[in-house]
Length: 326
Image 1 (cartoon, rainbow, N blue to C red):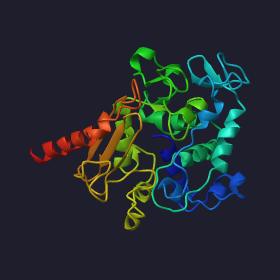
Image 2 (cartoon, one colour):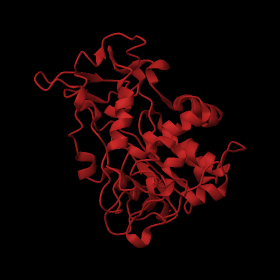
Image 3 (cartoon, rainbow, N blue to C red):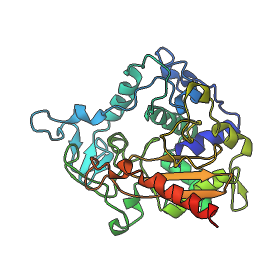
């Protein structure tokens, strides 16, 4: 909904390609083991990167299990600018630590598929350096505003009342409060709620607008945002022969029995799920956009009922069955 269309736009313009390496995007990676990772490998999750890093752990007091006052303040200041939650601001210097953790993280031994959110941190850094603006503002200017996706935003409390936002989690391990109107992901929260891999809030209708843009070959409301060619390039399963179902950024239907969909969608279809209980899928063959929104992490992210019952894919199957039965 944010980083991927911004990246697609630059590929469309010829600024970067699928084979652009991380060291070309971010020169500070030239002397690292990640220098030659390509955009294609990173966004198909076959670049050997760790799945995620719990950055917040190093900011916690191991004895009291509470955030260290060295790193957090209850009020905003130039030295504590990143709002992590209500009355909780992270020290400016820690942002460099987050990117240092990524730079120094070990690569896995094999290129087999493993979902990683690290490429999206890096791509946000690249996008913000390239344009000289923050990702939240960029994606609003390039997509959301003209799409009429007015509910789609980072840091929704800046625009909306809390009573129209669903709560996210009762956090008793990091922020020690009810997370309501703030991003669930700890790393994104530590960047002030705006990150390449998490932080976007929206209504289902506005998610559907972005998915319809993809489904329409890059156009929406009479405006051409992306070319059909670039959408097809990103919606391609490049490593299906290696049992990797992923497109570039997009998730794709499972190659075997279990996977993200009902198994009844076309192979040209694409979408993605979210940790907090979101799911969206578009099928060019049937011209269907399916959006499922929930806050399954409230009150606790230990709740796995939705995954255990295959609720999202069962609803998807019911939609397809209804069409077949017509």
